Image (tube, rainbow, N blue to C red; front, side, top):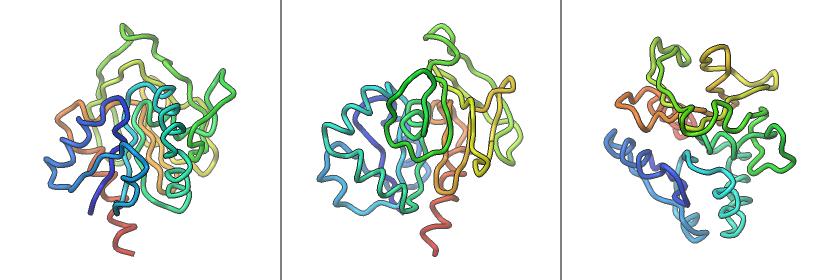
Length: 192
């Protein structure tokens, strides 16, 4: 199994380090030529979604990655990555990948001072540590989207087929739960 991590901006190295510590082979996507390598899943990290979206377009990565996601390649978007995947962004007309049928609210918890840590249920797991940094949340989901986690009645993790959207930063805690969940999604597609 090999996982690609979008390495244009943001917290990509933390995802890569966590996955490698779990024994997973990783690669970084920085340019279109990187797409020639085989990979089984994709991580869209936290960071600045506007900057990442702009770079995805300028480097001609947006459409090829969108096509792979639409074709069923597993993807996990965290924080900014969740925004990149969202079909709609509140108070904005533009989108990026637009493959995940949800609406997100950007910087929903405020600026940097609004960052916080908590623990909450995630999927079938009891208490999972969650670090929120200028985080979005999911304000609306289509009926086919599974809600995996809520914090203060706000949706902070969703799954739609091969797509996992997370408002928090699982790469910044010692817990491997969210990454293990994503790896299980990939394993199901690899073993087909």
